[in-house]
Length: 423
Ligand SMILES: *Cc1c(COP(=O)(O)O)cnc(C)c1O
Image (cartoon, rainbow, N blue to C red; front, side, top):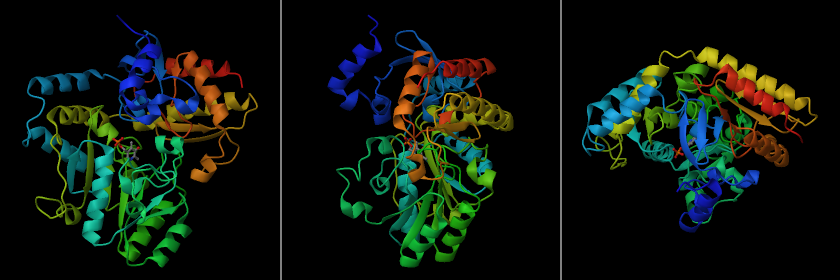
């Protein structure tokens, strides 16, 4: 018997905390119940009720090709039939490693893991092991997964919950996490002046996607590079969202900045659980078994996940990123105009195939300005769009994701729906 989302949610809440396996899916901040999904194809996603939505979430980033791309599906099926996991090296790991290294200019070596969280957690461990220092600078509103060290003023689902330091993270674990506002070089400089010999790394989303979309200010990433060089700290670009999205070569190619370490996730798995951390040989050779910094994983380099990653990157390699960026900007700008016409305060940030409409008049350049957005207006927008078949992020502090599968008709339908929204 097919159950509806509401019935499934009630059952799920009995056996899964909050009824979901990742907090943001519960739709709490938009005062809604989650839709349980049955299938997805291209730009659309279909709930268990059989309702089809135009999807601007795209699994929060991985599905740049759209859902269930035939080449990716075929790769998964073939790999799965050949054995789901070996716990031994396989050729696909090597193939994906070479594809990734060819795409991103800053790296000689890459280690595959199973999530973005594992990637950032290990990149930090490596930076600490390499520099023999403990402190790390992160930016307010940036999200780097849920490892203890990063759960201080994080973005995304964590920002939603507004927990000032989560229970379960010992104060000692975050005492070495130093915070600065995004796009604020002076504060980073001040932290280095305070702790000139103790900072192992700066970790940054080179374009922030977890406080809503916030591009780096002119000179910000260059300034971080210079400060890291000056003080002997490593610069870690968390490209879990931006890798293969801002350009095929990620943010580092787009902005022409060379980080020391890079973390990847989302798109490189083509929808399967893959993360990676990478960098120059000088750093990466400190990872076990060639070095002493330990990291391991039973399912790491999983052959099915490697196959879908390879299939995805091989298509993206020749994809027209410039055209998608132009279509996304045109759509987002029209959406902005429609909402402005309704007299609500709105600000648009957009880059590549991502955008965020913030319900505020304040230009959004960091977490503090992002938080000037009115959550009630976003909730009203979210609910009315969803009722008209447009599926948006269940939190205002997220970037809308456009895929190569989105058609002009999808955009037109979304704009029509926006025209009917009432505040
Ligand atoms: C999603 C995300 C992560 C965490 O990745 P998971 O696969 O969810 O663990 C880390 N960093 C950034 C920038 C992300 O967007």
